[in-house]
Amino acid sequence: MSSPGRFAALPRSLAQHLRYRVALLRGLPAGGARYRMTEGSPDVGWGVELALPAGHLEAGVEWAARQTQVELTVRSGEERRGPAAEGDERFCFYAPGIRTPGDDFPDRDPSFLEAAVSVLVAEDLDAVVLGGTQVHDDVPEVPGLLTLTSRIFRRFTVFRSSAWSYDPESDAVVPLRMDLRAKVLLPGGVTEPDADDAVRTGRRRGSYLSSAAFGPVADLRLRDASDVPRRSRAASGDGRPRLLVLAPFLARGGAEHTIFESLYALRDRWDIAFVTLAPHRPELDDRRGDFQAVWPRLLCLGDLVHPAAMPGLLESAIASWKPEVLYNANSTTLFFDFLPAIRERFPELLILDHLYDHRVGYIERYQEPALRGHVDAIVAENRRIAATLETRYQWPAERAPVVWPCGRPESTFASGDDADDVRAEVRSELGLHEDEVVILTAARMHPQKRPLDLIALAERLRDVQRLRFLIVGGGELEAEVDRAAEEAVGRGARILRLPFRDDIPRLVQASDAGCLVSDYEGLPVFLLECLQAGRPFLGTDVGDLGYVVRATGAGWIVDQPGDLEALETAARELAEDGPRIERGAKAKAAARYFSVQACAERYDAVFRGQVLPEPELVDGVPPGDG
Image (tube, rainbow, N blue to C red; front, side, top):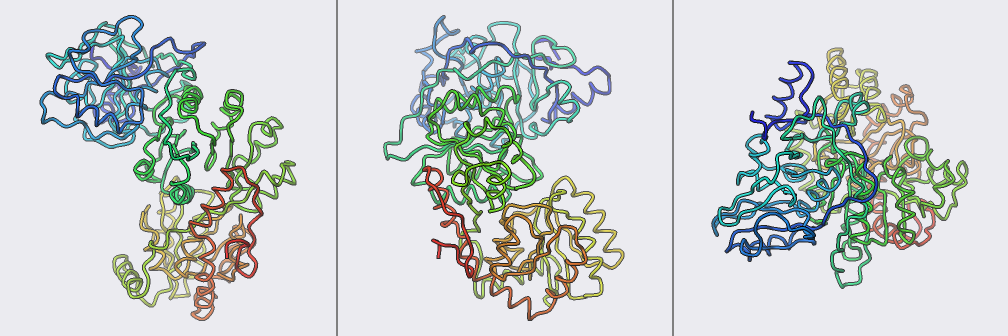
């Protein structure tokens, strides 16, 4: 490959070199990066220009209006030629290869330009290719630097004005200097790097291109992007307060379900934006498209930049968008690292955290006295979290509101004859007999969920021919669980093992009971789905799972995780029609108290700084919700 199009970060050995080149050609992560911080704010202009040939202005204005990057100017070729003039406020330009009036603008996600500018600022680059971080496009092959100027790749690339110019007559992008650097984020290029290597070199996702060799790893500067002067999007004018939600990633799990459904119910009351801080994990599926369809402003910092660049970008987003509330949903370690600077710069911002367990995770961070002044309230997913915060960490009870997760919208589950049809269809698809009693577990294959206990339990119950265990989910233990299940089936256990699926409500209706044998939980959405479908539940006494099931009579609870003997006793009773049907009816009756609207109302009160009473089930009815 010629020098201007050369891939940087050449590996040390021939074998590494070949793996590196193959990865690049396949659009996979390749190339390391060693980062060094620079002091102060970036010495750059700001904004982005949409550069177009004559005759495309009207379509350009319409396309630009859908982007969340509001510092956006649309210019024709006659208005702008050559490099950026000294002092020009434009930081970069986007010239998407539009040549004839019939050409369409690429269907980019609404935060495309905002994300690209963020990467350019933070990593001090000359171009960024965003071909698959949020919307998966068909990209022919990873390009070299000069290939970025071709019309096909310009549809994905944002250029820095100090390094490239645009010629409207020939509709061409031209490099202005030889020392150019670019970052490529293509479909599949956002997976987690090797942990040891990440610690050693500070590698981050994405591939890097350079007109000069970096050496074994790319040596990049990180700029403090906190003071990039971005104008705020105009207020909606309808009086809605603004809420900025932080999340690790937006997968297809219980936490994301509760966030989506409750905030969707509040969409007319709150103007909402999202920032994610961790790389998305393909094995957990991806809900970014669902969220962005409702709330266009979504910045996936975890997929775009090195963690050290995130604080400044987060501060810049807060300064630009001006939310009244910052909610750290499902928690993430980076939140606590960023917190002091955010509180110092935005003292009036209402900052809320979220905790999902009273023993593990981030609750131990609240041993730090300084957090009392940084966090205004902690949303506790269950009552044990709130109690632990008060007794062990001396956290004021009024600053630890309990907000239980929610079930599905009522329309999710079929009813009447339709429910019977769903049950029959799914059982036929999976090869389950109608007379089998199917116990369903839908969960991540993670040590928290103790999936190997389910395999051992199924082996203990080999003599109960009616029982069939259906274990569904992906995750880090998936291969180990698959092997254990196959071996157990060979010894006579009745197990059906399935990878991740997104039709859990249908599986619930096709089953006869739900089961989780976890080490810890908040209040699992899977339990609430089972209640909605009238399916009794077998679980361990973790989080508020045990409290809800016992208070409503909706199933069986075992005191200690790992107690296979107690689980076996409960499962044998579950196999009997009478107890199972009786507890299933109680499950159905309890479901309405975990509705989406009930959850949304409590969130709305928390976001407005109100003090909430602890939810409590009295004869199956939480006060204020019945």
